[in-house]
Structures are given as structure tokens and as C-alpha cells.
Amino acid sequence: MRLLSFNVNGKEKYGLVAPEGIIDLQKFFPQYSDLRALIPHLNEINLQLLGEGKIDYTFAEIRFLPVIPNPKKIICAGMNYKKKRDEVNDKKSDPTLFIRFEDSQTGHLTGLKKPECSNEFDYEGELALVIGHAGSHIPEAEALDYVAGYSCYMDGSVRDWQHTWFTAGKNWPCTGGFGPWLITADEIPNPQNLDIVTRLNGRTVQHDNTHSMVHSIAELISYISTFSPLSPGDVILTGSPNGAGKNRIPPLFMQSGDVVEVEIERIGCLTNSVISDKSSN
Image (cartoon, rainbow, N blue to C red; front, side, top):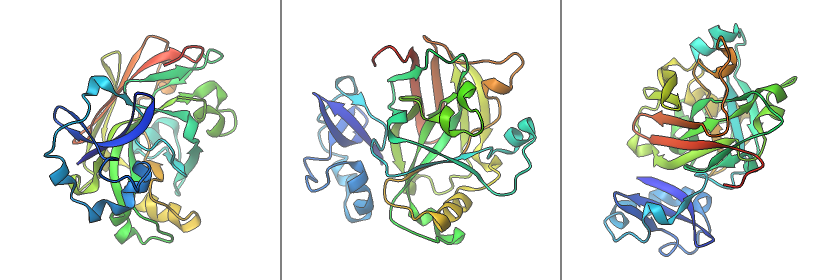
């Protein structure tokens, strides 16, 4: 099933994606205020049956929000594809991690805000996962059981603000695209075999498969949960393939007016235009 968060008529809602539009799930589950609150209960409800109902909104009527607009945690893995590590000569054995903040995100078909003070706004397409239920010290063999589902992420990087670490370059408002929706984990039994492609203005700039990850999704969940208990709705970004603009000769960065896409097999295609941070979406 495909689940999403969206805004309609100034109200934030969550829903179920149908072929011709969206079914409003809040009218069925008013006790759950948002998608993050619904996620722990996915195994208790029959979304398949609801998916056969009449849509409430067409896609043209809604504004996509980040899949989880209000995660308690967004933890990101860097340098997690083999060719990417070779590209920058990274030899670390443990996962490289950093954090994103909630307000650094934006949704599908909304503007990624390029800071006007930056000349190095870079693209990084990634597979994102959303945690389904709470866990701490999760064994690697059980880790995928804690995943609610998967989505696409554009982990926009303000490279000239990554001074000594990633944090300052990753947390400018609306620089991380998240969507279009969450594909529930039952539809992706093997997340380590998904093609991932990033396109900038129609040109393929990144292309790999999730089997090339240095640390698997299960490894990342287990490692992170050892030092930070995970909660439903927490988001983990699993790293970006090689081909980012900073490491190209000459460098290739995103500019206002560009269109960037992240397409992942069996999930969908996240599309964002690039706008100035002095503009509004």
C-alpha cells in the first residue's frame, strides 16, 4: 500500500494512494492525528479493503507534504555505497552518520530551496526508510521487522557549508525532498535489490542498486538502535550512490529553475523543482 501526508484546503491530512487519487484515512481513524501516529497500527487495520473505496481528492487538489512531516528523528548514513567511498577514498569501517532536522524537509512536487548565499547546492538521491514500531538494541537479524515502509529522498547538500562536518550543509530549510509516498514494507520483501536513479533536468547523474550499500539497511537499524532507541515514524536515510555534483569534473550543482528526480524501483519517482530560498513554494 502507498501512504502519504498532504495538505488540502489549509489542513494537514494523511491518506491512502489509489490509482485515481487519494482516500482520506483520517475520516476512518480520527484517533490518529497524523501518519506517524497511524504507523504503529498498520498491522491491525485492513487498508486493502479501504483502498477499494471512493477517492476523496484528486492529485491535483492536494499539496504533497514530506511523508513524515514531524519525525522525532531523521538519522542519515553517509558514504554508504561502495563506489561513493572509492570516489572520496573513505576507509571508515563503521557507518558515517549525521542528522537532519524536521524543517529541512519538503514534499514531492514542491520547491527545494537553494540558499542564495551558496554556490554549491548538490543533489544526493537516497532510499529512505520509516520505522514502524519502537525498538532498542535491535538484532540485525530482526531489524527489517521494524520497518514500516520505504520512500525516496533528495538529500540536498549545501556543500560550501559542510565546513568540518555534514550538519551545517544538510539542515537549511526545505533542502530535503521526501516522497512521494511510503510503500509499506510488505510490498518490498528485499530492499537490498532496488535500482536507484537520480536525474537532473532529465540527465541521469546517479545510478546504482541498493545491493551496493556498504552497510545494509538491517545493519544500519541495528547499529543506530544500539545508541538511540527508535520510535514509530523515525526516518533513516541509507546513503547516496556516487556521481554527486561536488565530485564531478567540472563540478555540477543545482540552480534555480532546475528539476531533480529520484526514482527507486517499486517505490516511485520523487520530483522537485529548485527555487531560491527567497521564494515561496
